[in-house]
Amino acid sequence: MEKRPENIKPTPLEGGKESTGGGRTAIVILSIVAAVLAVILAVLYISKSRLVNDLREEKADLTEQIVNLQHDYADLTSDYESINSQLDSSREEVAQLVERIQKTDATNRRLMRKYEKELGTLRSIMRNYIVQIDSLNTLNHKLTADAAAARKETATVKKHNEELQKTVEELSDKVETGAVIRGRDIRAEAYNKHGKVVDKASSAVRILTSLCLTENNLAQTGPMRVYVVITDPEGNILKNSESRVCNYAGGELETSASREVDYQGSEVELSIYLNDIPKFGKGIYNVQVLTERALLGTTQFMLR
Image 1 (tube, rainbow, N blue to C red):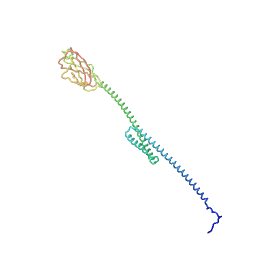
Image 2: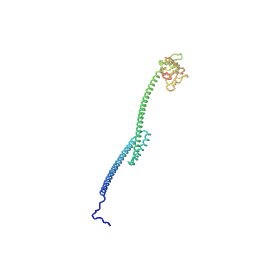
Image 3: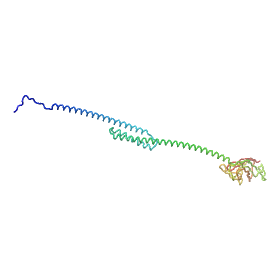
Image 4: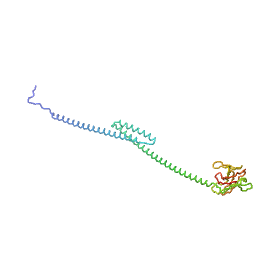
């Protein structure tokens, strides 16, 4: 067995010093990587937190807009039943949208975009309601104004027609009044059997009434009957077999005698006899001369 020399010392392994230095480098590198990862995670966490906060703020803002729109719908009123029915339906949609967004998480961006679109649609619908209501109100105001103007015009026309009618009636009355034939120089006298004028009741056998129909170009022309009503002192109307009934003042009037004449607007003199009276009493006799349209005049005579 061969012996090692005692003076020979063991030689250290080659590369031992370099191996220790490599381990330390690895540790440093891992530490740097860990630090970088920590920084990245911190940045990601902060970014995520900010994103969540931004989404929550967006949700809060969107929710506020929807709630404000709900208030606007509540304040919108209309006098038209058809629009009110549509408004009620839209108010229900807004209420449901408020309820849905309050139950949805802010990070659900798909639903948030959907709610945002629904908000835009409901706003557009509301603007259409406002345009419709304004248009109808404008039309209603115009129709009201037109109706008021029409009523005013109708009232004016009615008043004018009433005034015109009144004028026509007044003119008609004047024309009718002017068209009435008048009598003048009315005279009544008693005659005896010899044809002489007498004033004794015992001698009188007939009464002659004479008059003149005045000229009137407005009066109706043609055949016309003139009546005489003679009342004795007792108030009785003297009549004979030829006496007629006259339609006068809306009723029938008994007359003493009458005569038909052809009146052509010029003056006409005429006489009307009352014969065949058995007896005349003493006193004042009243005489009325008339046509079916008007009283021509009156006179009196007395028998002793």
